[in-house]
Length: 64
Ligand code: SF4
Ligand code: SF4
Image 1 (cartoon, helix red, strand yellow):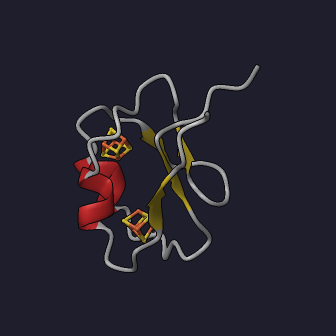
Image 2: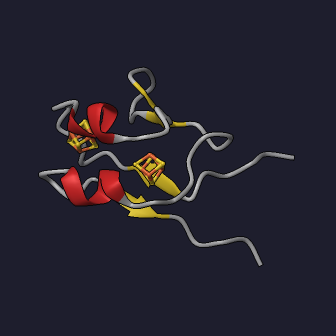
């Protein structure tokens, strides 16, 4: 069973790195295309969404 993080990085990502530096949980990792959000760390605080200059990070619908 896969655990899904509260947010995900989409292919709009421009690779600026702002979200990596901003995430208080260090949940976004600089590998993968798009970037990987670690479900075990992400709290869904939304700070990465606020800081992304190209709106590349979106909330993920909670599983029913
Ligand atoms: S929602 Fe918060 S905890 Fe999750 S990746 Fe973004 S900044 Fe990090
Ligand atoms: S802040 Fe946005 S554009 Fe920059 S690396 Fe993160 S997801 Fe990509």
